[in-house]
Image (cartoon, rainbow, N blue to C red):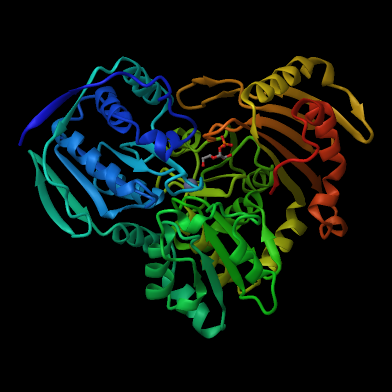
Length: 544
Ligand code: G1P
Ligand code: ZN
């Protein structure tokens, strides 16, 4: 087969962010934009020739076209074999699972997670390494460096492959294996959870669930797992047909965007359990009847009860949470006598801890929970974990969480996002906060006294690398916290995230409304950072 060497020139904006390279679809469709980045990945990898890679995406607009281009570039770069999900699909957790199971060199994931899709939406490319997790910083930096010097890429001339047909194909000298994107993942879930017990719970206890796939990748997975394997009614699955534009929605599983689910679970006679996942299937939201489980509480409850589930019967070695995530999991770790690590935002920081066997479970406030079975967060895994626990405990979701608070205390929590700010405005706000830090320690604001004010920096306990400037942290003496940081995943302007947390041990205070409890802290956060003066906005764009 003819291999062509195409001359090209660098694009200067190909530095991967928190989760790979994310840009508008139209940006990716510019001449050679995708090809440059893919060739840069191959150029940065250590002898990728003859090795196996895994390839697939969340099905968003441009997924299939991109896969055909990537296959041809891979064949021209002498990659030995590529495993592709049927129709070019793989959820992010499933691709992590497949990389590990098939001992691949790595995988290319096409996704922009929960960002809107469609011709005017976003697209993304992320490289994961042989452990199944996101590429470490030195590799993403190496890819970026290659992209800045690129002057050619290699591509095979040939027909497109029939991505909808399972089987083995040859492209140049490369083997392409098109596999069922669900089977390996389902087998892994069956090894971790007691599917028979969950199935029985649905049947015997008349326990009902519903799941919102938000027109994204988890639809087919949910159908295979919940409907075909666990016997739930088809009507329990909402928006389960994946669409290239995700139905025009914003598949981020939170109280604002998972509308269908929230209406159902807060409506009349809701099912016992409700869940949603995001665009690429790594995030999750858990709801009970008229009850929302915060992601940090979810992690804490899973950790406290993990011994009840087959995959975690032997106990946990440690847990980890990202810095802005509430401290609810820390309390569980303390009681279990295991460490709780506080990492910067982004899943990659958990990877080293998981690989070194230092943690079993981990999670982030942004609706991401996961464990050592793969190296990505995992939405459906979290849902199955909850279902397994509910089947064992035979309690409602709300009862499980409230019992948990009674034992450990409650962490009230909320995140305020200021979207689409001019980059300079956001950066100045953060710089000004930074300058104030030394004067803030020891300062009293009403009943709140600051005892730590710093710019969070993390030293990886495994490879000792230091990651600095990970957000401004204000910790108060009563356990409350205010955190400020800028998003690393946006594709337009800057997003300022303000995270609020306050702690109540007393059970009599546990039934209060979160936003009310946090209102003083919210005002304080606005005053200290002067958000209104600096951004011209009196309110955040979104509160979750
Ligand atoms: C966001 C979340 C973060 C998550 C990341 C990728 O990043 O806050 O927890 O790991 O998406 O899913 P951010 O936009 O805040 O940088
Ligand atoms: Zn995601």
